[in-house]
Amino acid sequence: MSTAALTARGLRHAFGPLPVLDGIDLDVADGEVVALVGPSGCGKSTLLELACGLQQPDGGSIDARPAGLMPQRDLLLPWLDARDNVALPLRVAGTARREARATAQGLLDHVGLGAFARSAPDALSGGMRQRVSFLRAVAGDRDLLCLDEPFGALDAITREALRHWLADRLAERSRSVLLVTHDVEEAALLAERVVVLSPRPARVTATVAIDAGPARDRTATDAAIVAARRTIHEALQTAIAAGAPA
Image (cartoon, rainbow, N blue to C red; front, side, top):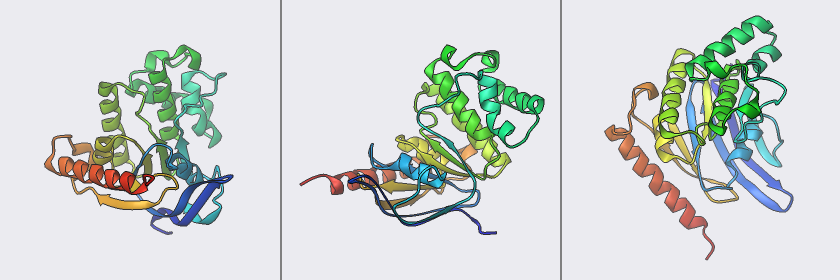
């Protein structure tokens, strides 16, 4: 079996006359965490949808292992409570209802939502809904996790706790992750490589390797993280400046 969870070559995509992706080459190795950063609207979310097979590219090729997606909008099913929303991918995979619900309850307990397991989505705050959506993506037994701003709507304390929880879970069971984030520090703390995209139509303008040890052991004040954050920020600013209209 190939060691690549995702391989994209010359990937192009457009929405009608609007080009979004312009010749993207991207690899995610087995067990690797790769973060995508770039200006808003450059096509990062579209790239995740292509990786999950929700859209087909207009050009180039993309080959990915079975992938689970956490979109920016939570898309929770309103007729299911929080526990059954988290359990949904397990049920689809054939897990018995009782076992799936027990697993989902344990996940909700881990992120401080155990008491809200039987709550409907419309009874939850935006941050709670995002945590439920995040857990639903993680609960599925997919080789590749595609996470679109998974912590964007959370307060700083909850965001840091969930980041550590994700790093610990990935260390326990190696899975590949393609992470979209606007937070340069978050990218440096979680990823092994950070891919910088240009303004739309997106091209890869830089790739930054994060040599800072396991994600579960990293802190924002580590010298390697501070240096990586600076490098990513400079690469992003260069990409934005190069893509600005004359």
